[in-house]
Image 1 (cartoon, rainbow, N blue to C red):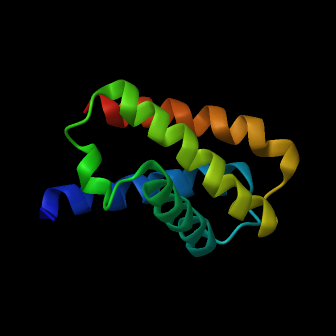
Image 2: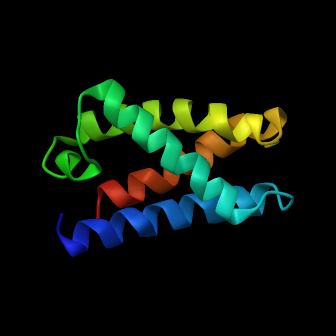
Length: 105
């Protein structure tokens, strides 16, 4: 895997965790990142990808679909670890908006 791909993915996980920790200050950033990593792993397997790197050359529509499914998988873990259900919609909206920025960079 290229270092630039790894760096961008790590940056994305970091930013997503930051967004959620701002919405819910009671969440551990490390735990938030872990929930996203689990969501990524499960989404990759469910979508037939071996690595996140495989998405790099895919059309934006496929990347958006992947991200939606990633949010679904990650949210399961986030809610289990205590992320408030009442913040789920706000979290999804903020994360989707941030993902759109990543898609255009």
